[in-house]
Length: 114
Image (cartoon, rainbow, N blue to C red; front, top):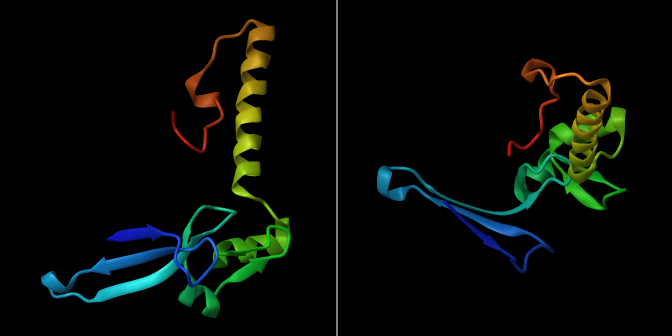
C-alpha cells in the first residue's frame, strides 16, 4: 500500500495505490483526502457517490461526518481534540484543589494516547 502526497488531480489530495496482483488480487488506485472532522481517509471517487461537503471548513467530509454534521454542525478534529485536552486539564486542576487522588477509572480518556 502506498500513499503519495500532492497529486495534480485535486488540491491537497494524496494518492493511494494498493498492488495485490502477486497474491491474486487487483491493483487499486485512487486520489484521497482526509476528512477534516474525523481524520478518516476518503477516496475521492467514492466521495462523489456517497459523501458530503462542509461549507464552514470548505472541504469534503466522509459520509459519517456528513450525517453527524446535520445534527451538530461543523466539528473540526482540532476543536474536538482541544475540548478533550481542556476537560482533562480541568479535571486535574479540580483534583489538585480538592486534595483528592486521581482514580484511573474516572479520568477522562484522551482521544490520542501518550
